[in-house]
Length: 307
Ligand SMILES: [Fe+2]
Image (cartoon, rainbow, N blue to C red; front, side, top):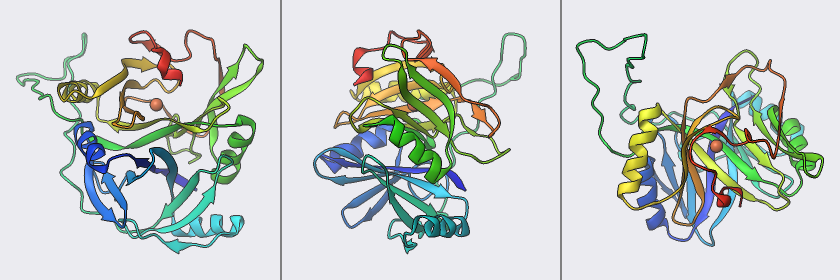
């Protein structure tokens, strides 16, 4: 029913400053409608990031339904109208409100925008025992990562026992990994994937951390490969943007990750090489205090990663 996560929506203190950062982070401007400014990834998706000026805050999430018929069925079940979105892309849209009051928009249909120049092809890698590149050289430049898509969001939620069932029931999300608070002996969080049957999907499109107050932990954008994470890192570093955590490889989802702070302090992540799952695997449980809760390798986890 839900095909993918579509966009993240923020209020930011300065659209100009945010635009400077997003250019260096690797997103492309996709125009404005009213006070809302849109940015897109490489490819034909109309947008994946929305910002408007105001008191800095997270506003909501967009998901994409697999068809207009699927959207209509969901609208009927929820008793909400299907409307024409005025955002780029010409989608049909419905809006729901999650238990913390966030706007959850679901889009369908629309017309693909003209694809911007595609991101570079995957690299041909010479491994220790398998040599794939002969009589050819590896040459890369330090420049902003080419972002392919929004991959996932992780939200801080007021009550995990309310938020998790809501997303499971409304959007059909499946739990890939549950995080258990072994100190207080209660559920803490969950990393959830879309249910597309035998079609593989990202290990998580939405993560929920039950920290007792609402907010966004981070938004994560997929890039082509490890070199793109690295070259993107040095491009942001050269411009003086604030690094947060990385580069490392997560346990939950296995992604190679690199976290940055945008001008308002929101965490944004580049990732590559995440796990892909069908609807088959059952949830895996990780204890909150497990040394494997965050990463397999990488720098020491900074304390402000848990804010
Ligand atoms: Fe992430």
